[in-house]
Image (cartoon, rainbow, N blue to C red):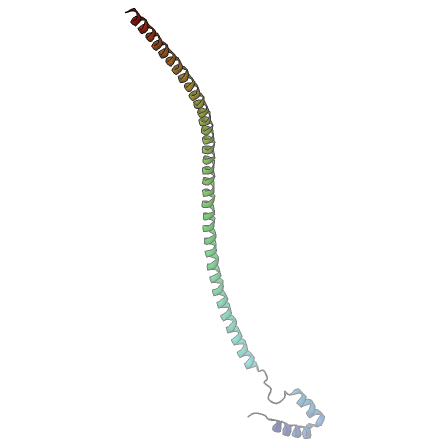
Length: 165
């Protein structure tokens, strides 16, 4: 049965009559007010059991989260290992590109030397062409002069021969 304020007042009156007002006041100061919930040993034991079960459940959840983090860590380690392999492959590709660049530089040097040779040959060809043209011109003049002289000589001989006959 719940204790209400009326019953508390009746108890106080009876206690004050039996032990005195001062002792009744002291006694009621030590008692909790009406309607307050006092903790009992059984209630505390029940609370302890629920908290222990709750902490055990939290421990299990944390263990599951730790296991998942361990899986994620293993996956990241695998990803890191793969990235290292990719980095090594890129380094090899970079090394190969450097070799290709060196080969292209060598080809460029060879082409420049070839261009110099072609330029030298072109100059030589131009010189040869000039000499050839001069030689042909000189020879043509000599032949024309020879032909003209021959024609003039034959004409002179023909004239002379015609005059004699």
